[in-house]
Image (cartoon, rainbow over all chains, first blue to last red; front, side, top):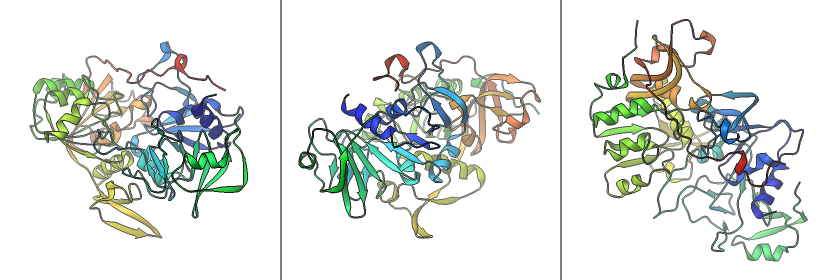
Length: 218
Length: 237
């Protein structure tokens, strides 16, 4: 199991029966594949759909039926379509139980940066700022460090922010980190790694939970 | 009442240079392909566009960009246009990025006669710079203003000569809300039906918002990202 898969599998266990969930583009989209069987969970796509199903086969791809990553998806029974204004009304209005997003940086204050690197091309924030401002629970799913080995979990974000004090949990291949008013707390840790190693790969200061457990997967 | 026009070219024939134009669509899904093509044939310049995205290089609004027709753009995500970066850096195009939900609501407000409204989105980010804030019930909000346009170009699935429209699947996106916020809304549809043939309970855009309607000649509908079942890593659990 690679790091991304471990992250997706662990977050899938956090999704509860009856949840309405928005999954961000990339790694978060993988979570839908690992949901435990028997859960009734409705995935929202901010381009205007509730009840997003798995990707179709090549022959069934419908250009009028895509997710926010512009990838073809399918309908699940009971799905619905709506316009962008209504889609973001349900996001901003606090109706999403959970939003899972990728990040470039997260910090000790629960601040998130995931949309812009100054000096490089500005692509735009899309719906990320609306999602972090409106969802009841915001989980960041990302690899712990950059490809260059730099920490993405910082004392203070250096990139332009997507939202301030919006992140509740950070899940990486190394563990589960909760954002609390007192700072970041490592509450679960990947098998075969020590808290000191996680801290060594993290610029932010991590408190270690007294109930630290091994990060399981399904 | 008959709002039907013969062609996309006829529908856009009187759009002036320098106009503010809203265009429906999310990525390449639900974009008014035929109306964009007709605008590009006219080569009018100095346009101020409002649209979630900017097409891709070589299709959709990317064609307007490449023809040098756009002076400014308001959108939420423009990551698929390599040409855009050069134009923004050279000062040939003014780009304003707006959070997607705020963009949709600013358009909705424009169509609904609401001049401004408060949202939590973007607080503490560069989106908040220069904006009025206000604390309401213990939380701080930003004041965002309505957007209007001279023209809205929208794409629907079916419509009738009164301008009633219905949409197909996720191609709805920004189309219905933009149809409400312009002085002149032009709708292109895949199928034109007789009044009464659309179930009144299922009409999404009532005809009052639409001034002109036409049948699109042909649709390419490219899929931007071909992520399909056969490519899924790991497989389903």
